[in-house]
Amino acid sequence: MKWTFPELRTFIASYCLLFQFEDLQCLLLRCPWINEINLSIDTSVILSKYSIISSRSEVRRDVNRNLSSYYMQSGLYGTSGNPVFSNISKLILEGRNDITDMNLLEISMLKSSLCYINIKHCTLLTDDDSFSYHKDEHAHVMAFRLQELHLEGCEGISCAAMSQLVSNMNIVKSLCLRETSLADGALCNFVGSSLEYLDISETVVSMVSLAPVIRRNSNLSCLKTAGCRNLLFEQGEVQSTSGNKYGRFLQEITSTCYLEDVEMGWAFCPVRVDDLIPSFSKVRRMTVGLGTTLPENILHALPEICPFLESLVLRFQVISDRVVRNLLESSTNLQVLCLHYCLGNLTSFSFQTMAPALRILRLQWVTPWITNDDLTILTQNCNLVELLLSGCKLLDSSSQEIISSGWPNLACLQLEECGQITLDGVDSILDCKALEEVLLRHTGRGIGRTIITDAIRELPLLRKLALDLCDASEGGYDTPNVPEGKMMRSVRMSRCKKSVAAARSCFGEASSSSSNRKPVQHRETIVLEWSSRQLTTTVVEERL
Image: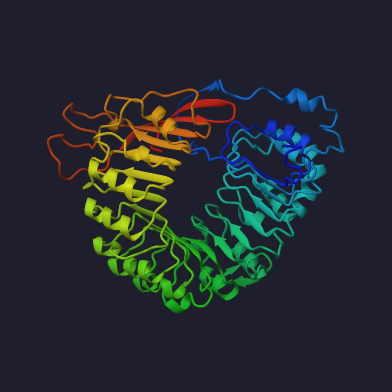
């Protein structure tokens, strides 16, 4: 690479599990002019909130040789004038749950160059106090220079450390603290006024700390607060420690911001269309979830309120044919439509219209009436690269051919509780060579024992596979240690609760009856997860 690409400045090795942190150090010794690096991989499916029954690991037999002796003996590594990392301005390590505190300390040498760092879901980072002497030397300088920082899912960072970090970020433009220990005490210490992107979803902040941030950052174009329940309790007037009073959440964002990307839940309660005009007139991506219910007049007027809308995700909302049909007909830029656990009486009329821009469609437990004829109409009206269907129990083995021939370029396919789609196997699904993620759960007991190795061999881009042992035609699946596809990240296999009576099926009903089926409750999930060094097999009590 040194001689072949002398002008190389950006190096991307995303989803390449076998590329280790040590390989990066070795590469940069030879090519120190690289200034942007992306080593992101898929986030681990095993989170700290899950109950782990058992776990074991084994070293990958295809792991790279250890290159540590090369860069340690070079005489350049670890010195104050170390050229390794010295030019890097942008570093993405998202999902690398093999990155340790020591690795992060090595990165901290970048106090004069690093402006962008993404360490989302690097779960081994622990905020260990034993490294405090390094923190004193580099932390404040790095934080002061950072323009973008993404820490989503880094739960090991303590409240005190979070407060210290945030208080030193004066010029940051993009800040993601989703699912961290962020609280009012830390956010009140943030004094920056250059924010354009802020994600504090699933934290405990309230309007006491958020309102001053919104008011001070008039260029804020992305705000994500889903799951912030304390915003609801502070939606009346609140008095902060400085004596200033702040209004409701909706009042603050509509009086200050012109947003392009919003993710709202608790405390987001518009009633009139005028509540969102003109502050939402530039919105391109919108997610509305648990904690609020948008009235039908707002949902129906979304194409008018947000004329540039490209992505809409609705969770636990009340929808209708009128709303969905109007979205597909009037939002001509709409590329993503996701309806999760929504109430209302949708019919096939909703989707009997052309939607040429639509690329991602997720219908989770909202369209039980879908038939093969409806699928055929969908393939004619939109060109999808991602499809999620749940609870479509009228589908059968012919549906598989309709999906694979209608959307041959699918990158993601998730089918759950969808009739008997896989009763005769999965041959048509394996014809979709662009698939990167596949989920098949309760889709028919016809999946063969070699499905995992077959999928890895036939789908060269496959990274994530989720199955259900109820669908296994031979009672189980063979699991490889060394996947032929180097991009494979995880395999999940759910197991249902054992039936009380032998005559009962995995749907929790008498096998002789085909009506009134109840959603199954899974007993546990077996997870195979590959990292750069090992394969970890974990049994989790929950359904993943």
